[in-house]
Amino acid sequence: MERSHSGLVHRLGKAAYRKVSRVQIPLSPLDMKILIIGDAGAGKSTLAKQLESQLNIPVYSTDDFLWKQKFSVKAEVSDSIDQIKKVYSSDSWIVEGTTNYLVELGFEPSDQIIYLGFTGILSQWFALIKRHFIRQDESWKHTLLLMRHVLYKRYKWGYKKNDPTILEMVRPFEHKLTVVQSRTAKKNLNKVLQTWRGGIPQGIEGSNPSLRIL
Image 1 (cartoon, rainbow, N blue to C red):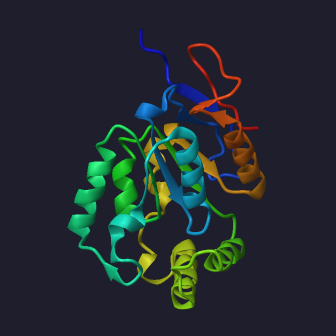
Image 2: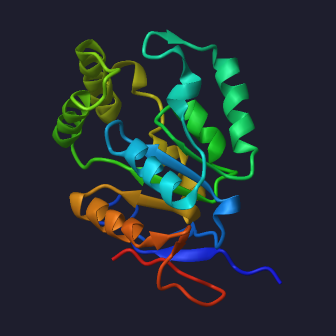
């Protein structure tokens, strides 16, 4: 008899969606498919690595498919799409990234989608500068260009002004979306993740488990 995989996650802090979001919490990590999207510098890679170690699921970044030579030479769009489609068609994966045309392909096959973001541009800039000193492969030129890019993207200036935001793109799948933006929300999420053992949140029993992040 197949058991239900649905769980209830309360809204985390000040989020773009005011109502409670419903996400999929698989009982087994073997078939779990998690898509982590959101703002640059919000902690997507960190969260993906946490989940990888706790759930034993392979992690992929959209950067792995976007760049032929990281941060300097982009791969052909068709090649990037073909390669990431192979990941999305596999049984279990964690994909994190910000490239819209690559993450969009994962909306439908994912079990749950987690959005990590910032409430303002200054907090995002601070996070990007802080990340610069941690990552060995990011030059100051790349960091400054990224800071300009996220500024234009946030306020829809220039070439991005007519593009939908990622939250607008994911709206048809909000039934499996969790939005995490405020500092309090991120702390609450980290506390819950720290209680996970073997892919199943501790303290959850019965055939219809639920994960509550308060």
